[in-house]
Image (cartoon, rainbow, N blue to C red):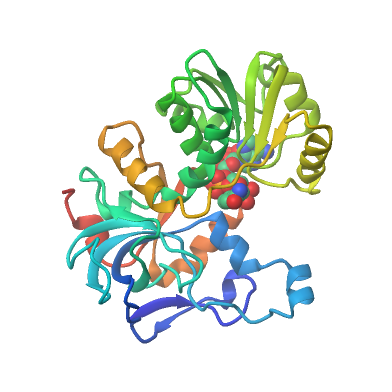
Length: 330
Ligand SMILES: NC(=O)c1ccc[n+]([C@@H]2O[C@H](COP(=O)([O-])OP(=O)(O)OC[C@H]3O[C@@H](n4cnc5c(N)ncnc54)[C@H](OP(=O)(O)O)[C@@H]3O)[C@@H](O)[C@H]2O)c1
């Protein structure tokens, strides 16, 4: 099978698309034939693997040779003890880190992992949308959003930000989305009640009217989020920030017990329930995929370079086979 392989951590130049043996499912696993995958920020982080960590662990060689989290495809085979899915089922989800990833024609994963039957109203290349929602969801859950709550989502145009708008609207909250001018229309189309361009005066004039602030890109300074929060409001972020400052704020919040800063992460073992719930929201028209660019597998290194710019809106798709784009929903 064809796969995007890495032998060492490094820049996208280390990626080599080549033929490798097809994996064989363990008894509790399914073998998935991938029609579409993505390159996301999680993949970029794993590819680069911080130099300090590499030096401390001596892990210059990559732990696994194929990356890739999001996938949509069909079940090709099931392990001897697996029974939740059958040959030919259309499935989507996230490939766990313990296995080689989804940037390949085939991969294996546990059938009880983050995998579910695909939304009936999407093509494969539209269904590779789990990662952003998976990492947006813990903050939305932590806030326990409900009608009457006001949330500001900063950096609402990325994979996590576009998902956060939709998950917050799903729970009935009032959403203000802060994005670049070119993404205002996108944020509105996803349901944001107020959209603000972070390069304009309107951004500087935002006042303390929010119960929650979610920094979905890890680029927000403390002066701003403190100014926007009502007394007792809570700040969450998906990233430690350029100087790891959010970790210090988190520590301070824990030490003082004020609970004002959180960096919520998905619960272990929650993947399959999450992907199934996302499928239901998509089928109900309550969650829309946001797709930016697409690349064929042969050009996946260029996809990594683009995602590393930090400028993508939503998801960058890798077309693994011709079926991804041509197959009709359902
Ligand atoms: N907690 C976790 O486990 C976890 C998992 C995955 C990712 N992350 C982190 O979460 C962050 C977001 O991930 P993602 O996948 O959503 O990123 P992404 O899709 O790459 O987000 C990029 C978006 O952010 C916007 N943006 C860039 N700079 C901005 C700024 N200064 N202010 C406002 N918007 C800005 C960009 O648009 P413009 O350039 O046009 O503004 C672009 O649309 C990343 O830092 C990532 O490392 C955390």
